Image (cartoon, rainbow, N blue to C red; front, side, top):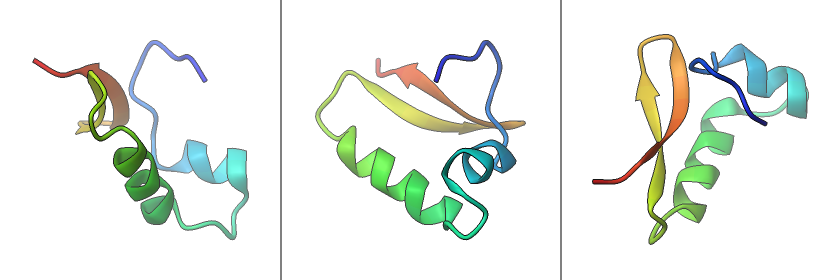
Length: 53
């Protein structure tokens, strides 16, 4: 998935299905990113990947 602006919480639900928990999905992604040079940041308007500084 590549987008130029933050992704709203509705977008992952459309991709993985309405029955999926978006919160669990986001937690799983953040866990997978531990130790990597980027993170999933919560920003105004949704979420986006950012590099760690």
